[in-house]
Every structure is written in structure tokens, then in C-alpha cells.
Image (cartoon, rainbow, N blue to C red):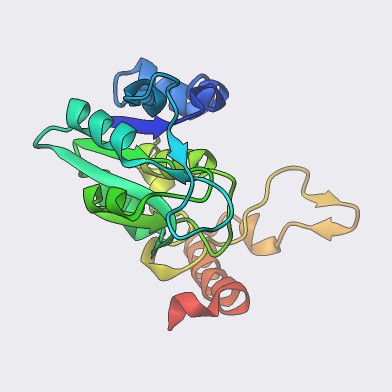
Length: 220
């Protein structure tokens, strides 16, 4: 899988690309990630990428030319372009799974007051990571890449993925490790008796209970 990210702040990705599971996925060549500074594609002598808003308004808006020119230089028949914007479809696990089937994912990060509306004509999909505003799309793009890359075959143990939250529309069951008792809080007895049938039943019941209490919307 290849992922290209259009950003004005490539340095923000240094830690993300060089740590933990993402780094291992890159090293194993399971994913290729390129962070592209679209300022390099500005036709202006000062490499300006934003400008004042027609009709007035606070802040600056991203200009068309740098982003269109950048996309023209990297897009292929396999490309799927995602723009990050609050107006988009809310991101979830099902979208993450669908992105793993894409050979070349292009993510465009906004900044300032957002995009000139014409830039959105490039998008195959517009995505929002939640009902809140960030200063730019970089953190949101890392969130999306992390959630997608971990689903790529070979990145994480398949068995671990099957039992995670949001599989089958429910949260995951409670989990415990040693010590068996800490500050008066004990591990449920059912998890220590070795009866795997009882453990499985308890876990299924707890998944339903936790989902009803914390995310009843998932069960509607």
C-alpha cells in the first residue's frame, strides 16, 4: 500500500514515521509513506499557498494551484484522494477497513481557514475525524494512517484484530493482567478458573454490557 500525504508541515510526521508499529510496517515494506510539501508546487515567486477570501472574511484560504499541481504530479489510475475537512463524512472503523483495499491513498491536509472550494473537486471522499476543529489536517491524517496501516495484512497479528472494539458493532470486553489483586480491586474469578467455555461466555456478556453502557449508539 502506498500513502501520499500533502502537508505544509512535513516535520510533524518525523516521530510518527519513525516509531513503533508504523516504523516496522515501513521497514517490512508493507506500506510506503511519502509526506509531500505542496508549498513546493506554488507557482508564485514567494511560494505563497494561501490568500485572502473573496467576499471578505477572517483568515486566509488555501489556493488552488499548489494542490492541483501536486496532485497532477503524483496521481495514478490506482489513486484514491481524501480531503480532510469538518464537513466530511465522520471517520470510523468501517472506513478504515475500506481504505486498506486502496493501492494508492492520497490524503490532503488543510490549514488556515480551509480550502478554496474548487480544491474539493479533486476528492473521491471528504472525511472528518470528529465534530471539532483542529489547526490543520496533520494530526487527523496520522490518525487515519495509524488506523488503516494496522489493518494491513502482516502488520499486526490477525487474532488480535478479530477481538478488538468495533468488531461486530461492539466494544471490546474488559481485560486484566497481573497482579490478581491491586488496591482492593480483584480480577474476576471467572478469568482465573481455566474454564474456557465460561470465560468466552463471560466475555461476550461483558462486551454487550460495556457497549450498552458506553456506546449504546453502536447497537441501534
